[in-house]
Length: 254
Image 1 (tube, rainbow, N blue to C red):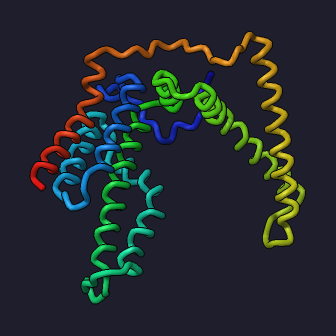
Image 2 (tube, helix red, strand yellow):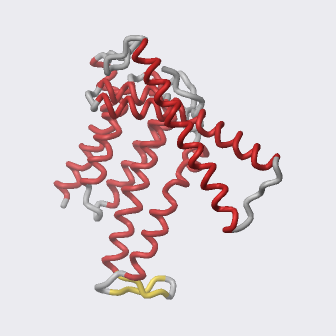
Image 3 (cartoon, helix red, strand yellow):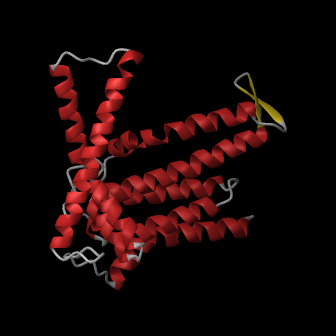
C-alpha cells in the first residue's frame, strides 16, 4: 500500500539513523520518553544531558535545527498552559520580573515544558528519519493490534484523496459565486461536509470490496524485509540506555 504524499515531516537521507529499522526507532523513542517522564523535575542537569543526546542524534541524522524548530510549533498550546500555571498556582509565592508567581507552579511549568519539549523533539527526529508508512510497518512488527495499524495505514493513504476532494468542492462552490463570509453560509458548508462524508464512506466500501476480491483475510501483506540485527538494536537503544544511565546517576545523587 502506498503512503500517500504526506512526507512534510520526513527528510530523505542515508544516515545511520535513517537506515535503522523502524521498529528499533519506535521502541527507542518510546523508551526514551519513559525515562524522561520518570526523571525528577529537580534534576535540571539531567534534562540538559537529554537535550545533548537528542542534539547528537539530530547531528548524526543530519536533520537541520531549523526543521526541528519549525515542527515544534505543535507544542505551543502546552507552552501557553505552562506559562499560566505559575500565575494561577497556589502555595508559596516569589517575585519574578515584578510578577508574583507560585513556586510550586514554577516547578510544575518547568516539568511540563522540559519533558514535553524533549518528547516532541524525539518524535520529530523519528518522523524526520522514517517514512510514515515505515513507522506503521514498524508498529506492526512490534505486535501492535493489526486492526489499529491498518486503520492508520488507510488514513495515511487516503488523507490526500480526501483533501483533494475538499479542494474540488471548494472550487466548485466558488465557481458558482459562493464565498463563506458569515454564519448565514454555515448551512452550505455543512451540506458540503455531509456530502464529503458520504463520498468518503462509499469510497471506503468500494476499497473494502476490492480488497476482498483480491483475497484480503484481515491482514495486510508485508513485502519489505524489516528484520533487525543485534547491532541495529544496539545502535537504536543507545539513546534510551544513555538516558537511563543519566537517570541512575541522578537518582544516586539525590
